[in-house]
Image (cartoon, rainbow, N blue to C red; front, side, top):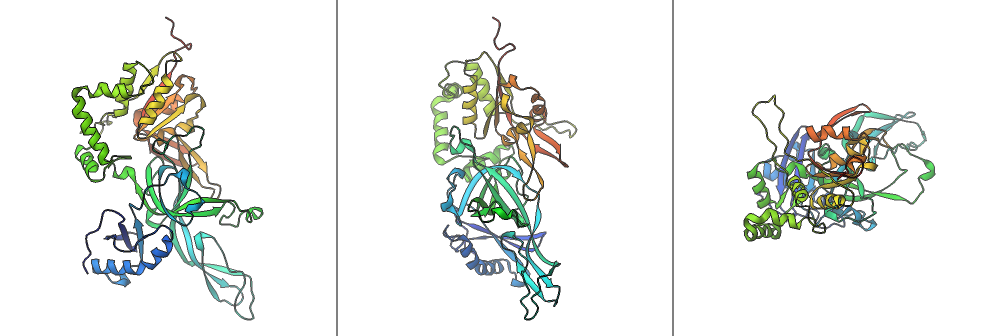
Length: 456
């Protein structure tokens, strides 16, 4: 049975697994009933499971016995929902969210099913753990036994790879509200979705919204809080698309292909109307394009053309140069700018305007930041007691712009920026974790002269 050509919208991807190292993929047309509604996603996934297996076997000349499991991955679902709009009305519904990865936990095996053996009569009882909650049998159901002691048979356990990540909303694209803390949400990744992102990357996640009591941990938790009615939202991921993995690596052909096919480059999305406006803007102004851009940048600040020109060039950036000699360090393409001037000249307004214009801009104040807040922090999970990396300002601004105000008020935090500004990465060795995270960002800083004012 030949497959019809897949459509561009609402198309799923099915992954069949023979073992942990062998995977086969096939495109499924949009006419098949994969998540046709967002209200009952899990029910429709179960009902269409048998149909997908027949389609894969017919298209790949496979037998049903050759496939252990089929994972349904859905992309291009619907319009992305902002994290601040994710409320109780979305529980048990299929949604798509987009954000920056803050924290990534280690990959652990999650027990799905385990057999227990009665210590008195030897009867085996299979137990299925829903959502990973450990629930051993209470008493033996065999007539005349009534034993309450069971031995877990660990060799019979069915396991699945499990990982938790935390994402934060992108303030530049979702609107900036004064005094509001950026929203975050926990996401659970399973099986082939684990290890698909690192802190600082922008991801688009499609999944089912679920609720969890803060005291409902694996070991039973605090008994005094089990009956509380306060729950927290989390996302059970169905598909994860890493934006940085699809971004171009400095090749002009790749850039033009991304703009024409996907309408996007990196994490910045271009519509047909935007591309038409860019072409029209170039035809109207010709060689005077750069001057027009300078006049459009932060128009509330009059003058300061040289300062605006430097900030604009930092926003555009350069091209990273690689040499043939492998022993030489590649030359970075990001431009670092520091603006020094008397108070009251609009330096902070220029930095805030640059952060809002940049597709990925982070604005921090130097007198209220720490080394961990600028680079990366190591935090401990309250449930698993594992340590994980939490991205700081430089890592969150990867492939973007990091604006640091009051640069002269920083005491010793300058040393934490040296490696990030020169090597374009942040190295950390804390709590037994040794790693290096990407920080390919331009640093735009503002400071006052020595003594607070220039001596004219």
